Image 1 (spheres, rainbow, N blue to C red):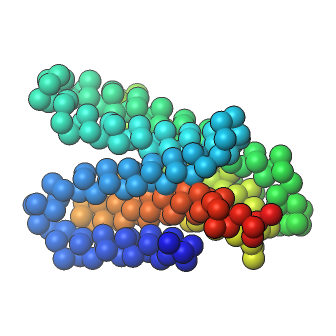
Image 2: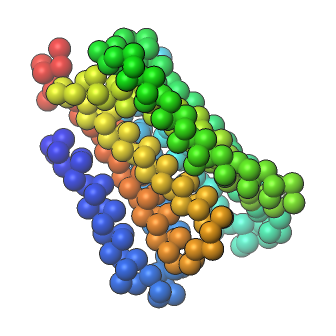
Length: 272
């Protein structure tokens, strides 16, 4: 597998899902199958992040960073499995209890996600990556990240707080995603600068693909926030959100595989 295929794969997968939505979006069978597409995407990202983590030795910062990100996606996979197969058939829980569990697990998964990305961003400062970028560019990108975080994450936070106070515990999902957006978008800045600093080298692949993954999650929460503010057609909202989620998960898989590949034997001599 060549590194360029890791760039093409997420694009093709996203286009493939979008075409399915366009041709079969109104069919009942497709609507009932959407949850499996989401689970597949989460599992794919988890696989890529885990593959990257296992390339590093125990105790290394990057191993822990990739593992936290993999743990986030694994948590979502487990939640969806339990939600689909056991909530009703085994436990017979009420809807309020199920919403509380979904919201609580979403909070936990978003914590794992933020910790993983924080550890990745910290590597830049520890190793000096990105210092080739001017101070002005660093401040500009960081300011843009903060602005985007507040813009797209702020509405989810406000909406989530109001909904939780009204007794809708599932809104913990919106609240957690909104807070994670604000923090993660601030972390996109150093990750983006790291990708810029390594342009022309092999290490640009995992960092650049990861930035594309994070931008996909930005659009997921942006469309979720938009759906809460504007009365979007449910089919349109589902199409935009899951297409963005497919993009994010597929690029996450590619980023992890790229990290693993450039540290493999095939590239050892090239990166010394």
